[in-house]
Image (tube, rainbow, N blue to C red; front, side):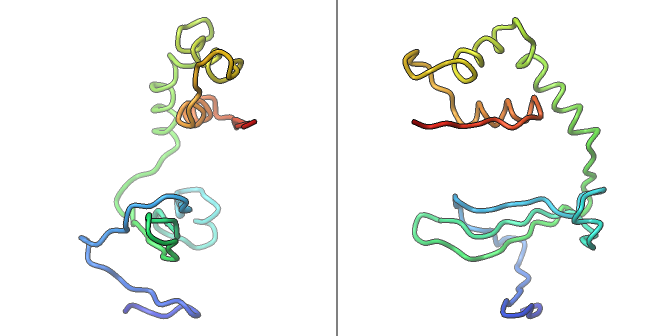
Length: 135
């Protein structure tokens, strides 16, 4: 046991211990340079994962992955976005037309499916929110 925070017990685990696979969890990156969390005192970047469903039960555990020596910069993210997205968002290109047909302008009668991954990828590429409507 490391310490007690209110009614929570914090334990440091061996490096080999990892959280179970899960879904419906919440995760967040904190402590990145220039972030609000860093200005509030989180000095080192880490990813926090809370709760979720592991297929057996809803968990209430909190995991932290320290990103210690990694350098997190928006320049690297912007470059990665440019390299990964240029061909997707080029108007008139086949990938852009596919996006329009399946996701942006398509409807269920076309038989073309727009996946959640399609929506999230395009949201990241365009740096915009995408709306999911289910009828």
